[in-house]
Length: 365
Ligand code: ADP
Ligand code: MG
Ligand code: MG
View 1: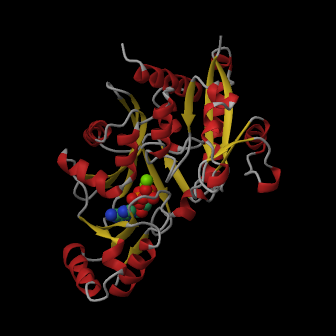
View 2: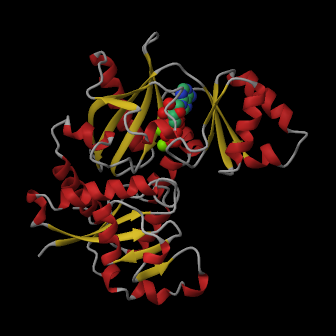
View 3: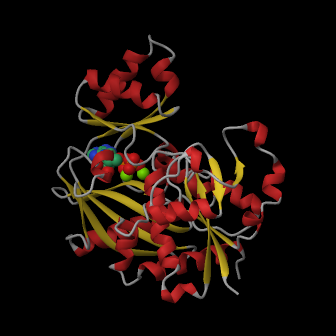
C-alpha cells in the first residue's frame, strides 16, 4: 500500500505564494515515475486567513498555482486562528483526511510555518513529519536565539546587537542612548531586522542616524525582537544540508543581483537574481563553508533539511555565517533543490529521501 503524504502548504505568512509554488513542485516530484507507486498525496491548504482546507480545494490550488479566495472555499477541516467559536476539538479528532495521513510534509515558510508552531502541532498528533522539530525550527527562525547558538558553537558571524520593541517604543528617553550605542558598536551601514521573519520582510540597510531610527521603528512593528547587524561587503553563498544525525552538505551555490541587497523584491521578481552553482570559490573555502553548514545544522538541532547562508568576504577570505533556514524555498528553481541536483540528488529522489528521514526520526532503529 502507498504511504499517504499530507502536503501542508499556503499559510498566513507573507510567503504564502512561495509556499504554493514549493508545494506544486513537491507534488510533481511525488507523482514522478520513481515515487508514484510509493506515495499518495493528500493536500492540505491553509488559506491566508488561517483556515485549513482539504480535498478538492487544495487540489485546485496545486493545479492552478493561485491562492484560493474566501468565497471559493469548500470543506474546511478546522480553523486554528480566526474564529474561536468554530474551533472545536472534534474537528481535529475526527476529520477523515487528517487521520489518513501517514507522514506530513509541511512546506510553509515564515511565522507559524517554520518557527516550531506547526511542528508542535504535528508532534502532538504523533505522526512523522518532514524537517526539524520544535527546537530546531524555533532556533532557526529567531535570529537572536540563532546567533546565540552559533556563538556558542564558535561559528564566526558579523557583529550585532539584540534589541526589543520595548526599547524602541516604550521609553523615549532611552531611545537616543540606544541609537548611540548601536552607532558606536556597529557603525554604518548597518542592517536592521525583525528577529522572526524571512524573505527580507521588514529588513532595512541604514546609513545614517535618521535611517536607523526609522528602520528600528518599522522593524518593531513586525516583531517584539529585533537585531541590528554591522553591514559587510561580501558575496552571498549558500549550502544545503540533508540528513538527521549524519547529515550531508551539498555543493556551495552563490547568489548574485544588482540591487542594494537581497531584498524581498530581488528575491521574488523573475530575473532579478541569479543562482550560480557551483560557486567559484577556492576549495579550502568550500570545505570550510560545508563544515560550518553541518555545524550550524547540529547546533540548532535541525533535522531532515536546512539551507545555511553565508557571507564570504573575498578581500580577507573570511566566511561569516548569516543564517539557517529550516524550511527553505522548495520550488523547481529554488536554491535548495538546485544545490542537491548539482550534488547528484534529483528533485524526486530528494523528496523521497526527506520522507524516509522523517520516518527514521519518528521511530529510530
Ligand atoms: P532573511 O531571513 O529575511 O533572508 P537575512 O538576514 O538573510 O534575512 O537578510 C536578507 C538579506 O539582507 C541578505 O541576503 C543580504 O543581502 C542582506 N544582509 C543582511 N544582513 C547583512 C549584513 N550584516 N551585511 C550585509 N548584507 C546583509
Ligand atoms: Mg531567513
Ligand atoms: Mg536570508
